[in-house]
Image (cartoon, rainbow, N blue to C red; front, side):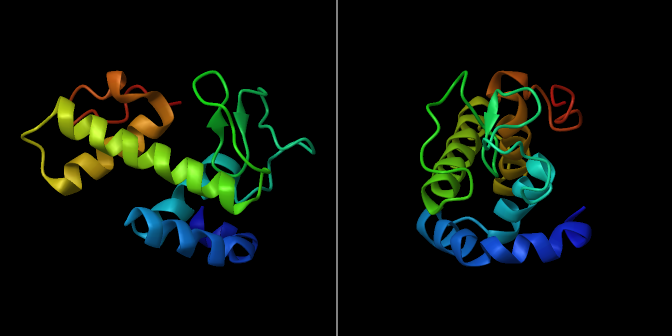
Length: 130
C-alpha cells in the first residue's frame, strides 16, 4: 500500500515530518497510518470524511470519540492524529507493562484503529481491527 500511495503521500511529507518531530515518532509510522486509513487521501469524500462519515481527514480521526481539529489535510489534523496515536501507544504500555517498546508500538497502531480495550495479546494484536 505504501508504495502505491507514495506519490500521493509526497504532498504531506513536510507536515508528517513536523508531527513526527513534535511527538517523537517515526514519520514512516504516521505515513503508514495515513496510507492505511485513507490511501493518502485518495478515498476521502469531498467533505473530508471517510465512507461511513465517522472518520475525518487523512488520519481518520473518529468523531465519535474525538472532536476533529483542522482541515482534512492540515498540519493541525496530522498533529491531532499523531497525538491520538501516542495516547494509544501509552495506553497499551499501561495495559501491558511487560511489553517492549516495539510491542507497545505495534499494539498502539492497532489501538489507533480499534481502541486500547481491544488489544488483548501481542500474538493476536490485530484481532479487534477492521
